[in-house]
Image (cartoon, rainbow, N blue to C red; front, side, top):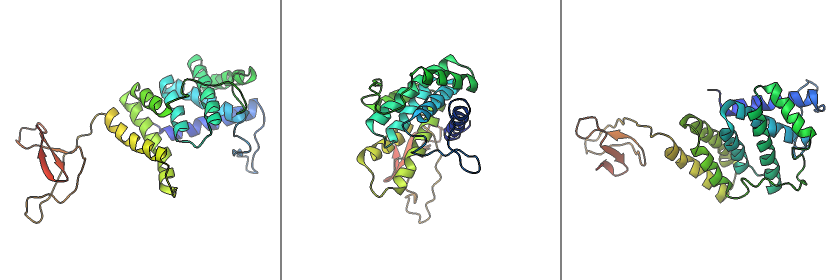
Length: 244
């Protein structure tokens, strides 16, 4: 399967091309590439169109629940203001409906443009309309949406969320409690949502004292104590612990 980030980048490029050709010209560099930055594509009609278009395309590809979870994941880990989150989630919702009603990228572009022309998209944070579905407990809502997905899509979504968070955690001098909580919860969610990955451990007792030399604390590595292949024990930091 193509990675979610690769698909997202492709859909965003489609959105920019359609917008530039059918709605208004996007500023370009000398080499013809679009200038996409805070001045040209943030909290405006292009930003709104991109959110709706990408959400629609993911809805076509993977269904509305996955598209909803993906859009919410972006907002959960972003540094957007509450008004920016409201704008993005609103436009994502409009996009999902466009994705349900259409079959192709061209159809999506036309449907989202129609929504934009009719005033169906929020193009400024000054808009008084509110998207109430994920107004409270956004992270809890994200986890609940994830539970509704297939195991494969759960895995893809969790990997995507970790990819979003990892650069923040690696580069930031201080990590907010909320960000760290989200990252840790995603790691534990992977164990909760997805089938346990069984690993056959290999340990070496080089000093002949009966203690393995590899620390596999909290692992899900199993071994067979009674040689009947029923995976009845685990390794812990204290050595071998037989399961009952």
